[in-house]
Length: 160
Image (cartoon, rainbow, N blue to C red):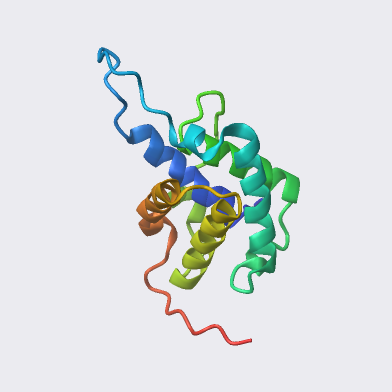
């Protein structure tokens, strides 16, 4: 089985959430609101954010071992796809698994999930993504928590 990155799988869930959310009424005379993807800054900004998500994970003692055997190029490509698609990009497609399937048997605990979320939000902040948009990214991430975290695992305090 391929070593699949936690973050690429996490963003697969974001896509599911984004695709299931309601879209503005096309018959309305009000122009459609900008997507979260556009408000974040589009393709180049999201690619830069994804690069820093990877860098954050590589330095994070809580999750870095989960990524140690991953192919960085592959992971970053998939993370870009899911982040872009989940935040409303219309020209990006993600073909990965849903969160529940992707995380089956990985035994991800609360601390690891929270570390990933922190790394994503820190990357957004590094790129000056506004608080409202960071909150929306957080809401998307949090909405898939139940499909990723194994609630039967007790998380020990991280000790260096």
